[in-house]
Length: 289
Image (cartoon, rainbow, N blue to C red; front, side, top):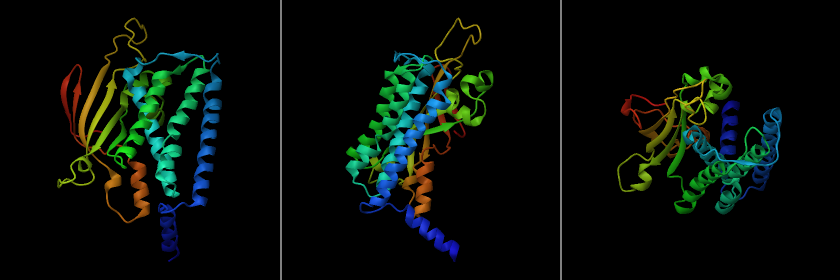
């Protein structure tokens, strides 16, 4: 009985408030401020301080990694903004304030990181990174303003590749690092909910069609034909079409399940896919992860 009672209390705790809950709102604001400050400070201490500083400067890195890093910026901004808005929704904050103070947190945090880049000799402030950050936030906010729902999701999938072993200091050592650093194994997806656009159809509410982009054959940021360490890089763009599931569209009365579905909705659900490349034509995958 005690376990059941505890689960019920936890489920009620996860239920979004219908009206402004000041205690929840304050908890969200304090938590976000602490995490924001800790995140920026931690990055500076654990990462940037090991590299030489410089005067603030900018770089033009728009051609690096076949733009996979730029899509990664948009993805991060979109997902952090989604988390910020949903946290304020949980506390009963108005829709307008969810978008102003919650959905923009990803852009704000990534701007702070970009400033740290600007003072690091190893990197620099990138306007293309900033444009990508803005694109991710705009994708979230624009849909909320236009449709009051997310009909087009930005999702992620990853598979391990052979390239990280060739350059682990740059592409990651171990699956966790590789999932963040090895652009060859990352795929980003625009997952479009069909029922949202075809209301009168008999399609399931949760069924999405997903358009993916990835790249392969990258050991360096830019193609360097004269690179003696990594010559003959077979850099290839990959485009995909597949199916997906919007987990938040699955009907359930459980606040615990709803929360779990919201968390895992960041990942594309594995399905068969067609791959189109700029070099090798069309390829069928029985499953994509």
